[in-house]
Amino acid sequence: MKENNLPMKREQLLEEQKRNFIKALNLRTVIMLIVLLAFNSFAWFIYASQVNTSLSVHVAGWNVQFDQDTSSTPFIMSVASAYPGMTTFSQSLNMSNGGEVDAHLSFTIIRARVGTTVYDTETQPGVTSASIIQALANDYPFKIQFTLSGGEDGVLSVGENATFTGSVSWGLDDNDDEIDTYWGELASKFYKGECPPYAATEPFIKIEGIVDVSQ
Image (cartoon, rainbow, N blue to C red; front, side, top):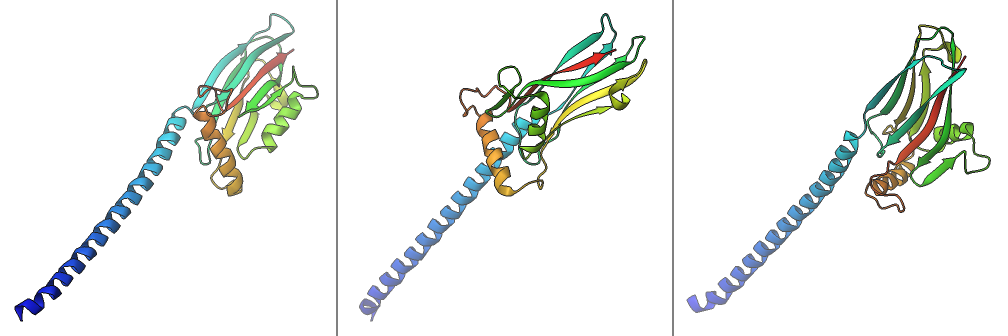
């Protein structure tokens, strides 16, 4: 009887070892999937965190006093990267009229770049400040806006203060997922320096303009 049961025990032992091996293999597979998922999530978190540290509020000051009929100051806005749900980027110019006459305010974009798309009023025929502002407002999933608070109807009265602000925002649910994915991936590639001839140090969005005041 003992000799007859020996093959049976061997078969049971082999079957048990087989089941244990499969369990261990499945467990290792699950662990690897979890690790990979965590790594990818962590990588995106690090990317978003690194980008987010470069997105902040910038404020400059300008006390307008006339030595001639007009005066101007550059307004340059650089945004390192952009992604859905990003912290709103804001750059402002605080102005105060310390002169003796009212000042008339205006803003002109000279050139702008979003990723690899360039708009330049000096080198591209037909491109104007107005057409660039329209393209920035309508052609992208993120919102690029310019606003003036104070200075009613663009007039900065004597002793009055006003703030000109450029901002970039991108809400999580503002657009179609496919559009968000396309621009989000492009911004990520640009941030990593994968869009030659632009280096990783170049901002994803750059706008160069001038704020003018005249009597």
